[in-house]
Image 1 (tube, one colour):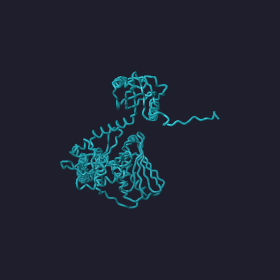
Image 2: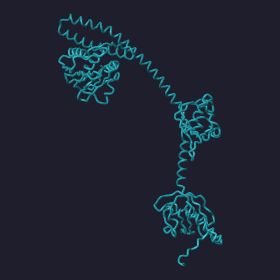
Image 3: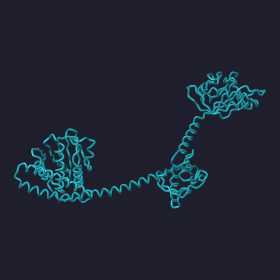
Image 4: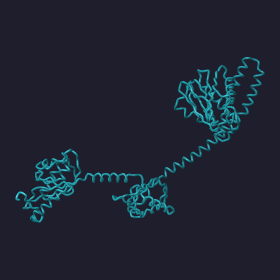
Length: 497
């Protein structure tokens, strides 16, 4: 039937050669990723391909008939005058890098190629513009420029090489470090700077890099042009191309001469300090030992004088002298103990003993030396057997109780706890004194560390608690303190059962 007749399909061969050419060009313009725009010499847009729609956001209806300034930022309008002047003169403007603006206000980096459009008489009647988005390319160039600047300004030698060890780049720091210019280094094998006895390292490094493994902080020696050996820390990373293949290695070399010299100087000073410290300990031990003899004689003479003296006033003086002499003797004993600890010569007897008995004896001694002082002993067990040196443990207990009294000027009592656990026995000495600030608790068992008293003065030599710590530690025990400033402290130590 006539109504069902179909229109014949048209083929390219059905058109004239001119029409065919125009059809092909139209297809190219429609399918390209580059924006292709034509305009009159007055800047009026006359064509606007699909890529222009995508790039700038304006439809054909919104763009055609408008001035090209539609997509030109205000600060770049002078460019249009320059471009049109070139086109009018019949000149082509190629690879003109600039910025244009999309409908949403976004700026786009472009490379423009603008060509004159001629009529049949060869007269320029307009311009054809091809705009290629180079935003990513520009970012890549900026990134490359920044990286190049970093490499150039780096104090570290940064060198690249092929997997065969041929040097391909050589930054200014490498020139300064090794003495070779770029021309002398690039194209040469990396063995140029490797001492003969370290050539095997290059085989190892290239082997790791070839497997995609980064070699980090590799300390070695390299050789300068004048034969000087430089200690270096190397970081060598694989260089990967766009296909993901490893094509070479990038090496960062840091001169660690100063660092090594500093370490050596530190080690030398440390050894020197150890010698001085040993001499100091020897002096303290010798001085303490020499003091013991006259102190013992003085104590004996004072005991005789105390028995012979009948005058009450003189007896008081003798008692005070004996008290001060006892304190001095105790300090000398502590100094001797520190010297023995530092020299590793403090001896411990190992035997089973009843810790409860040791505590009770220590309490009697403290009460006798501090009349009117009240000490409460809380313990539920009849016996607490531990193994160790009873005299040294008694020394710890007495020291803790003496400290508790010293730092409790407004109190006349303290409390002792003896607690048995499944695997250890704990002893605590609680006072109601000035307490210790939390930030100082971690240091109180350090040698010569002293805590400020209630009067603002620092008392003692700072060795009593250090000795306690050493004695308890060498009994495989532990020692610590709980305290609240202004509310007192509790010192604890625990010994294995």
